Image (cartoon, rainbow over all chains, first blue to last red; front, top):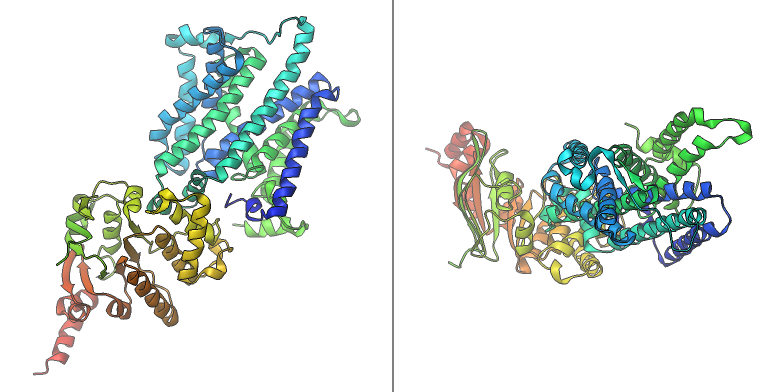
Length: 349
Length: 255
């Protein structure tokens, strides 16, 4: 993509380097369940992968298009509820249900995007925040409880392949949901990469850089922004569906919790918004670090009590030294420690 | 007189109670270089924004190639073949110079038949033409002001327009750069593009334009051949005030 320091340097050899790095990362992810890792470790990796997917999904609208969307949890919740309703009421299998949930989220994003994407800057941010809150209230409202069961939530069927005992099914489920998360990550990264090669991808970056100029050059800005928003909603919705079936129980205040908006933004910003790999790295490392801090006790020392403080320091350090995200390091021809000082100097107010 | 390629009828733009553009009739012939001049605040840029519908007209009509485009969204007008530059340059700062021009080639009048890759090739040709051939790899915000003005021109040209609006592309350029810009504008015109030039550099207006329209306080004050218009006492007065105009008149006709 034009903006990422990455793609600008993508000569043929670099493309090879990234191809190989991507293949190695994918192989490692696919091998992980065979390494007799504990169920805990796989679950840990799964949540980290899901945040990577959500960060990358936010990247379509927030990173490439430059619209600070603060309501993506609405798409997450609708994906979860769409999946749950399709599985429990229509008795559809999981994957078609998840797709239906994601399409519901995408359709919803078009509906609200048309008015809301006319606003720019903080107005857009606040409007999306409000839409997400309203969506939660809508889903938990008594009028819709025939469909959504209102505030009592929905129980989904368990993952139970035929012929397995409950214990075996639980183990198989851990692997299944892990691999499903890997598949979602591959999908969203492939979609992002493809997008950067299309006219739509170029138009999004042009809108971010200067919307009036983009419009004057013949870009249908409304259509492009809505498309980016719908992509963002679709992939966020897929993750919501995954979560619903994995957890087997969803509540409005859980799947519409604003933290699912905030951690996706954080992941994308830490990793490098507007790049193909940045949000993946940012989302994965942020969630992995967060879980590690919560549960691990290195040298018998309980880090859990400093969990939030350490995460805070991590965020501040990345923002100060790498304001363009972790991906900034990968885009350089040569690494040297001066990069960090340069970044500080460049971004001083 | 040939059918005008672009025309406005009683075009007006009112901000609050102020008519920034007040019932302006203007016609542009195909192949013409038309000058639009007037003192600061006369409504020149507002007029351009009105025609390109970046900021819609309060009343009046705009015609382009005999079709009324008054209510068309800007991107549709752009795709129909009307391109513009911005007085305050608007480069896509974090894109390379080549990518900037490629956006014009992707979405302008010729964009529909081009892939993203073909658009990049077209961008390279246009950048060569405007003299930015050697700077294609640079990030746009690393160009000089003159470079950014050229880039504005390249983005507009990459769209393959039939009509091009140049909003003060020479402001802030030195003498040599102005000469170069004039040569470039003539070359673009020679390729069959009709051009509207907004400029304060009178040398450029006289050297380039076939016809000049003067705006003052949003109204059309005068129009005609460049020398004739620039010597019109009303125009001199609008630019320099009535005292100077009287003195100029006195100097020209000693009693």
